[in-house]
Length: 366
Image 1 (tube, rainbow, N blue to C red):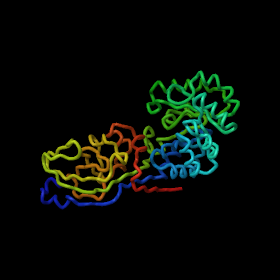
Image 2: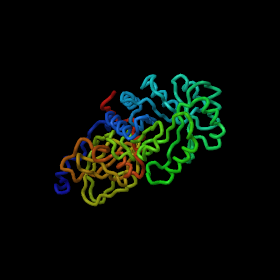
Image 3: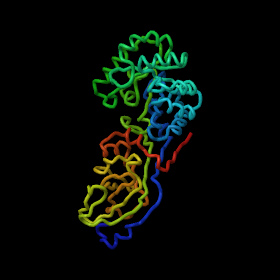
Image 4: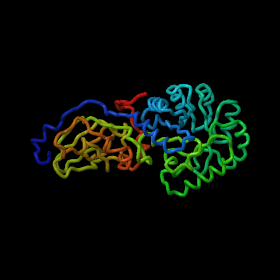
């Protein structure tokens, strides 16, 4: 190994330039498999939709939506109307596309032209929708305790009759703590949702990925998995969806007591071989990885040393017998959640931050 070869023997590894962009692979067959697995957890009468907001959680909304549509998904969920336009173009006319932000000012034309279903969140949105798009499909989002989006109990009570007469396509709420199965908030929100909606004649939805895993009492008429489709917690049985490798741009020998990277945050204790890979926080690899992160050379872990910078990450590869052309950031030994744990964040942030500079490859396209 390099430390035992001595400085002169190690020098052939140093200052070797390699070109190319970091490479992101998205396994669309895995997305479809995860959807089928989550769908199988519900009873046959329950529809399983899909959340494809935030560019399909960073994986590419167009390709993901096409694959899911080909797999049988007919209800999609996005954050804002402009995302819905992209999904409509991807899946055609035979799917419902729900917009979580509801009917915002200036959305009317987009909603009507692309047959999007706003999930109305407040009395102001109800008034806007009924005035500017009378007869256009809509849904209703209720606040059952998360205090983020949705009608509060008083507004719902005041508008319920009018809304039910107009025929919403869906009435939904969102769980705040579904990734913690024993959290009392889950049962509290379930009770609130039932209290607010029991007896209505329209379809209901409460569960995203975490809610699906809580059990069938949370499923109602439609479930809408998000993060579980893309290989993230809390769906521990998910098939991994993304793989990411970055080319080594250069290697160098760092002598004892020399430092690496901005701020001199890492100091070599022994003669070390340091590889610089072509990816950084501009590509969604969070700066905090510089403290605890690692990448992989095949089956061998390699620690990140020094700070993650905008375009580059430095890695200690002293212990490798040979220096590879690339190092794996996401792959069989490191999931998005593993990487998130090292950075002190969550897998959602890792996925949705995946940069646009990656050379992307889609496997299993519809």
